[in-house]
Amino acid sequence: MGTPLPETALDSRRWKALAFIALAQLMVVLDATIVNIALPSAQADLGISDGNRQWVITAYALAFGGLLLFGGRIADLWGRKNTFVTGLIGFALASALGGAAQNEGMMLGARALQGLFGALLAPAALSLLAVMFTDAKERAKAFGIYGAIAGGGGAVGLILGGFLTEYLNWRWTFFVNIPFAAVAVLGALFVITEPAGTRNRSPLDIPGVVLSTLGLVSLVYGFTRAESNGWSDASTIGLFVAAVVLLAAFVFTESKVKHPLLPLRVVADRNRGGVYASLGLAVIAMFGLFLFLTYYLQVVKGFSPVKTGFAFLPMIAGMITGSTQIGARLMTRVPPRLLMGPGFVVAALGMGLLTQLQVDSSYAGLILPAQLLLGLGMGTAFMPAMSLATIGVEPRDAGVASAMINTSQQVGGAIGTALLNTIAASATAAYIADHAAGARNAQLLQAQAMVNGYTHAIWWAVGILVVSATIAFTLINTGVPGAGSAPAASGDTDGVEDEFKIPVVAH
View 1 (cartoon, rainbow, N blue to C red):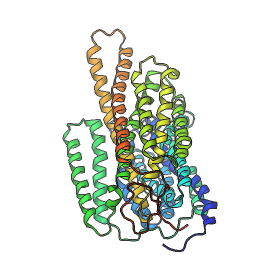
View 2: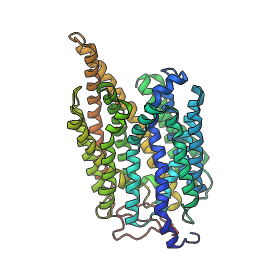
View 3: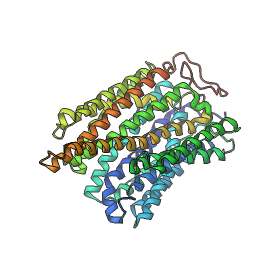
View 4: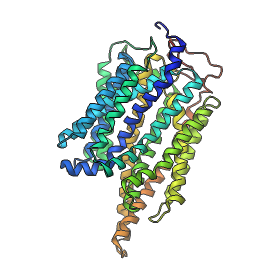
């Protein structure tokens, strides 16, 4: 597997490397929400129509979600460190272009480029951790930190976006990525040392790249169209049919080609499959919640952007606590399903509290405890999920396995926003229709209708989290990491079944 690096060389640098990898991950995750806060101001400045404003969000999501598998394979082929640095530099340049945008075209092009380079950066970051941290206890700590950032970065984006938009200018929600990226690039160049012998130099599977990219883009865009045009719209149905056909063709192709983009052994393992499914569903619930709570606090309660951002702090605190203090401490003592399953159940309880929202609900009495439960539960579940998504895979497949966990999150986010927003909008319209005749205060009726819509959708989110917990309890059956398991041989292609197998990499 190549010349091993001295143990001391890795030991002295891997934790410093984690800081820069985590910084890069934070930049990518917060960018998914930071622009939401700035969008109204950017739309007004650049003259973007109401019909096209969704493309500021959609262009990023399509490029990111559609190219993740390709980005993960590039990381395996070209090297994670090289891909990581390229992704960072490209993301920074795309952010500069977005911040300097003078018209709608420049903005949409910058967002698509951000998504493209994010698709290189995100799987490279996670797979670097997968090949650098192979000791069970170290891995638990490293993925605890990473999981907290992956889970809480969206809420951090709301806070930062509120500050920058309110006190500076919407353009700074783009420019802020440049110092993040610069620090991470310097750290990568001087600190990160990728273990030798972990690349996958087999030829690139071009049919797989084309089919997976087109299939994922069709799927993500289908949910976006469903939100704006309705589920029965011909274009929405056509996109979903195209996604099914393309992704089925992709799976068939991967089963036949000699060097597949996504080796089916990566997803066929019941534990990793369980992680991808349960985490993707949980993200559906969380993305919808971010949207509803943001609107509830700003529109119904009258919070400023900054105050709204700070209102999400309990959720961030809960995620950090759940990930680093519960997940990381218990991961080497209990099986992952006993962290992920209960974590999703606790998150469902927190989500359940929010079904009691009223126009005059108390932040301290209802929203704060709900956020703490949500954060604790999701942080506890995210941490072992992030680790289990890449554990047991051959080092040469680490990039594409990392891309799969990112893909499940991106697709889950797109589905969550479209599905739950559509449910909320329908319930809001029905409430207004039922109560308009006897209403004396139109503004109060509108607020009550909005809250009614949110609570209807939140009930669906509760159900989705219960399904996530059920999948975690039933599909994930691996044991305690490192407990009596032998390291996976370099030729092992079956993944893990009953125990974690830590992949052997040069270190």
